[in-house]
Length: 337
Image 1: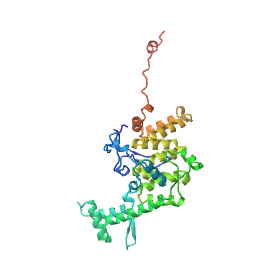
Image 2: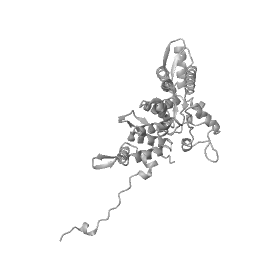
Image 3: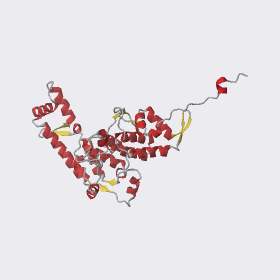
Image 4: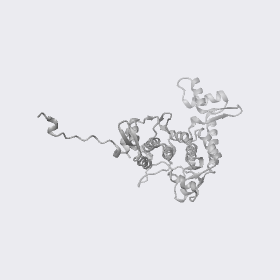
């Protein structure tokens, strides 16, 4: 994979015909999703370069059965490691005996307003929390994190793999790369609550379940999968692309595919080609005549700043230079007789 790309861009995605809030490209090289023992290649080296890291992220288990399969295949179970990934800014801190609850982001902003110039950030947070509330900032963070992770562990235990003979399994198998899974509405709601606490695994699972049969293929999944992508979860944008493809939002799926591919998920190339294949025989009226929807998708992508990604990952779709046209002498001279 060639990763010598331009600086990361910001895109306004059009999903199901509506503009989403601008989102910045992500590269799937975050250590949060790469096991500390990860090794690559025949030499079993630890991934160091961005390219190596992009190919080393761990697949996210969706159920306890997935975790068992990891063990049977003699693979390291990434569950406990991935479950610790939290966007700390979104955590809610509860001040004991004060009846006060607020996001970490709010406490940090308040602390920085009163901190003397030049104070180190962590010192400013600790000082503010101790002076205002009599508690250690670090202890409050750890307590909030541990509570979120404990709630997540309880919720995850409710996830089940669909039986291969079920209609639900066969329906989801046609849409998604991951194995079809089920959980209750109560558990989905718990994932949604934890997602808004910044728990990235919950953001991903809320999106997965809402996008699939278990959650009723709800468009609400978009919010959670984009949250997870913002936190560099390497599978979230691919799941969103699969969902939009299923919903026949071909342009939306194409955009998400390209961001997923450029982030480091090669499987999304297959989805992108399927999107173009499914739309190559669908004809629409354009300003200069009739054209397949696949052509309109490609031209719209190019017009909306996706051209550099297309050029890097799909050279076969890049516009060919216009051939030099040979003009016969008699046309050049004209007929003066």
